[in-house]
Each structure stands twice: as C-alpha cells, then as structure tokens.
Image (cartoon, rainbow, N blue to C red; front, side, top):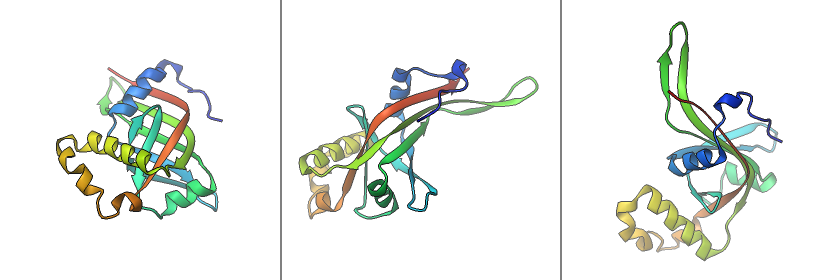
Length: 159
C-alpha cells in the first residue's frame, strides 16, 4: 500500500495528475526482479481509458518481472526548473505517480488499436504509414502491455 503524500501542500488533484500523464512524453516503469531487486526502465507510453499502455519486444526483463509479479509503479515528471531562492536552493516541479497491475494484451485488434493510439501520440504527422508498419508480422512480434491504475497521486511545487 502506498503511503499518503507527506507534503499535502504540494499534492495535486487526481485530475491534474491524469493531465500530466496525458501530456508527459516518457515515464519510468518500475518492476521487481525475481531476486527482489528493483528494476526501472524508461518507456514511451499512452494514457487511454484510465490505463497506461506501452509496447516492447516479446522477450525481456520487464516482461519476465511482470509475469512473476504484476505489481508495478509508473512515474512521470513534467516541467522542472531549479531555482535559487533567498538563502537556499529548490526546484519547481510537477510529477505523477501510479501503482497498479500490469498485464499483456493478447487480442490482436486491441493491440492494433493501442499501437495506433501510441503512434498518434508520438508521430501524428506520419499516420499514413501506420498500416504498412504493421505488415510483415510486426503486430505479432510486438508486445503491448497495459497497467490498470489502482492508485494515482501527484505533487508539484510551482511558481
């Protein structure tokens, strides 16, 4: 269970945290290795239907970890700005943190739809080659995973 935010004066609303998840370019997925050590990896992703979706190769450490333990966390950081204040240093920032359970999307049509949404987020001016990019078995070779969000929090220190 995730602790409550310690600095309540910096806590943002769930709606603000979701907006940050929508606008963030990359996030860090954290899983647990079989020996109990943490494993974090940067990902591109998309938030859709209150889930985080990402794609990857069909084999790898994050997939092994998810298969063994579906509990994950995911964090994004928005705008940051280090500042010198009167007699100290600080940083203006915004962040969103989620916990949830990850699973692999098996349905080919659902995978295709999520890949379309990911492509639309990152390469909206190149949607004309989307179908061609899936030819040659690429859809079958690509793994798509979802994180069902169980808890979301966010913090910020703004000007």
